[in-house]
Length: 301
Image 1 (spheres, helix red, strand yellow):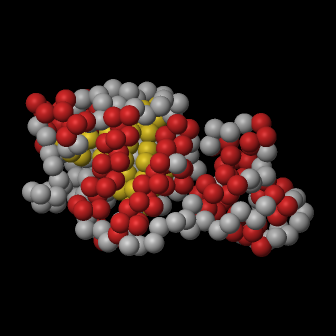
Image 2 (cartoon, rainbow, N blue to C red):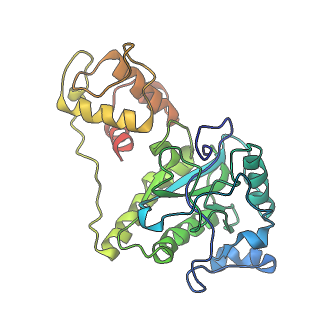
């Protein structure tokens, strides 16, 4: 799911960078006759092979590969998805072009349940899919609905694309793997895919960080314990929590002067935390507004 190039859209779209010729050896591509083997070969099917009809609105801005630090994972939407073949990127491109301010398909890459990898903006053009994160990320849509489980083939292609992106863009540090909801208040990429992001996705990041010698590990500070989060009480961890809420856009509840980071855990803090928990698909005690270790990790990752 994503936003438009410059503003939020009514439609769910996806995020960051472009499609392109990074060199003959940097990107493997496949023609129509090879689409069935894309899963095994892990090739990128370029725009010229899936029926792209050209950019509108002056085209998207060029991608600054040196600025890319993240790979952001998206789903197709709360419903729909699951199709395969060239119709998938073509239909997304048509949908995104319905907004005349959009240059065209907003994702860098689209992966189907069959494991086909379609290049859209690829490594050539800046993503338009993730509001607030387009400057430093490339966006990958897994073409599924929010409740749909990504296939083994789709996830294998996603892993391959993640590794491939480092070589294609000459990265010397590991790219972080995040979900759309880590940057914007949204349910995207949905429960099943978000569990991959938080699990296997972080393993992949650590593996790449170790390989590239850039450290690895997590930037999330240790969870301070439930006692830090009591309505009416102050704790330094509350300010860190607030900063995570603000960064991810969960600031609807406040005292009339906007939501600001501070050490006091208020009823507004609790309400904003609850909104974030509900967006994860949690209910009951899992969405009571009090951050546990998982809420803390997701808000601050």
